[in-house]
Length: 127
Image 1 (cartoon, rainbow, N blue to C red):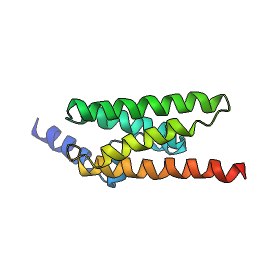
Image 2: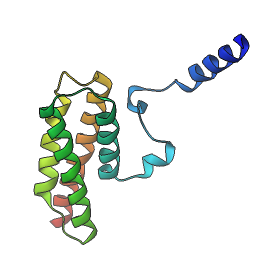
Image 3: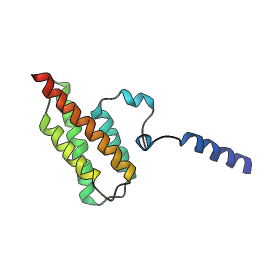
Image 4: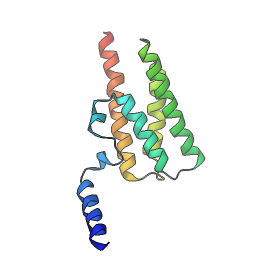
């Protein structure tokens, strides 16, 4: 029994190598996802493991809902910057929340940066 436990611990330690960016992330195929899909996935993962109050829970739900609605409209050709801006604002609030683990806040900041680049690229494309 003891060698089995040691083998499991060894295997777990080998798989735990990675950066804070990889914490709670999906497999490598996930990197092909759009910034919106990645953000929704990360928000859901962080929300599921975080211990937050109702106020922070509302920010999670609003950000996820706004991103999902943005994605639905974008699929129809409507780039709804208002929804994207609201999602970024809610994520900004969460990235500053002391209730979240620092790695989770870093992931949210990375996602916000990607979403802001997505928004900026939409304006560059309209010129």
